[in-house]
Length: 128
Image (cartoon, rainbow, N blue to C red; front, side):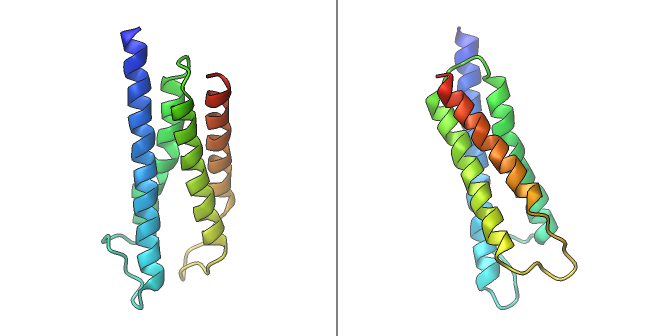
């Protein structure tokens, strides 16, 4: 029992980290969009930002769902959904802006994991 509670707490922490990464990613992109020289407050280019902040933010909630698979938690389900919604918002914003020179964007690469996260969050809530 104590082990399952620890796994659930770890899952919640992982999900909160994911949301924090997404907020940091979005804030840096907002600075880039408003900057004349296209520099954010983080010393990262587009690829580094995506790999360093975006990929973990996509993977962490999925890991959180599966390590706490048997524990019911509406809170965790809600956090996973929030993460998915933030990714969807970022994807919609990405579609609405021109890609940097030499960068090819594929919105499906964002929408599919975001929808998957939202579904996992809904499953977690429904089973709680």
